[in-house]
Image (cartoon, rainbow, N blue to C red):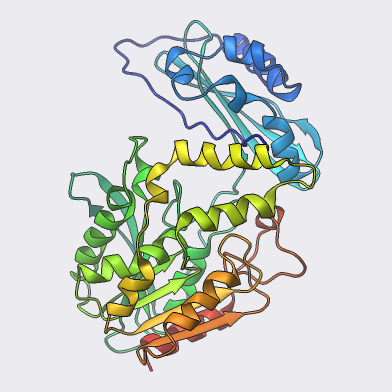
Length: 400
């Protein structure tokens, strides 16, 4: 079982400017894309620069296009290549059309046409600057992490209620922007707007793994420390601060709450089990019927090697039991990433906690967007919106 190749751009230290031939860049990009399209792994690997070879092996390159087709349907064509020259690098990009959507291909070359970046992932439309409803204001600010990293953030202020609480939003796993963009969807932006209409202000920020390509070795570095910095910034706007975590952010919400005097926490799609068990279920759910036990085991081993810190037990249930602040735990019943198996554990463990409210939604997926039928990754390719019922329930919890 092969992983879809997500390789972020690696920009090397540069000390001179150079003009690269755009036509040559397009020809090189076309050649590399053909290697990817026809699974010519050896040819592709030979063109990787040393920094890329340190990040990926041949097995990880194999089958990338097939994985893309599992996500987006049969490949149809790609558009013209555009070339962006950045000092000694040539960044080539093209829109690839598939049966069920579009993906972006990005290839980064040096002056010798060796590959320093290869990127194939869902394409997002640019954010339309829609006018905000009357009484709502969005400001930009910066969360200053403990190590000095600047994390751009958006504060959505609601003037529709007196002394509105402010909610700090904490992302799931992976490099996510302030909207928590997942393919065609932006659940955090949806929630910020929906909550503002209900008299709730929010703060959402770009995750450090989105801003910086520096590796992280713990959930403290990836999530917890920056969430605490975001909470400190939120208090400069309002002392009535809540935390809303989604997926990984929900799992870590009790740990964050232990380190700060929050008014309460909202946990959306929160794993109750250790990540090991959650990921085993994900691999089982996403594997094709013909996948062998060995292939599934290899997929799990690959995830362990890529992000070992996710598999460190966080004892989130025990931490939540120790909390005395209000807890709202929400779960979509169509979620294949964090399933009802976890929600039932939360129900059992928190049943005697008067400070805890638990709600499940039959039609909602992992992003709390309505849908029908068995959930799949392909569902995220279609643009949707977070359920207004979810926003109603959060607003009732925050402003009873």
